[in-house]
Image (cartoon, helix red, strand yellow):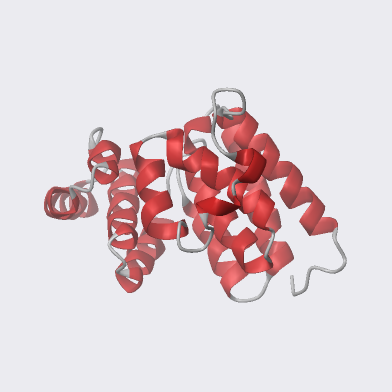
Length: 201
């Protein structure tokens, strides 16, 4: 499991699917729940990166049913935000993703900023907030192998890198994980309070 993120980032999907599926089966029967949860999330991202959205949703949904200790690194809230946004509950989605950012900062799990970023960019693209999406695409593409793979497979088609403008990644404007989380938090706060953003919840 320790190497799973790296293998995802370099596109070793067959190896991930084979070995992590076997681990997930073992953790389903023997535990521990945290490793079962991480295995299922890894399989979810592997499926998502390969364009198998139905399989990805199935793995993420199962991962969400696993009871993990508070403070465990988890993408559950990002997936919940994605679901709420897709169903038209935009302000609810902003609040969920915002709460996830608070949790990551409070538990010092800021490495998960790339997971937040995937959902943030997707939301901004739908809302046509191109500058915000481009700024975080620039961050995601150079964050790590996982982030670069997510940028190529999940969000690049939604936000053209030609929209970078002043957000083109250079040594002067690189964002740290904490800075990226703070930026997304501020944007989400603004959108949640914006009376022109529709819809439910």
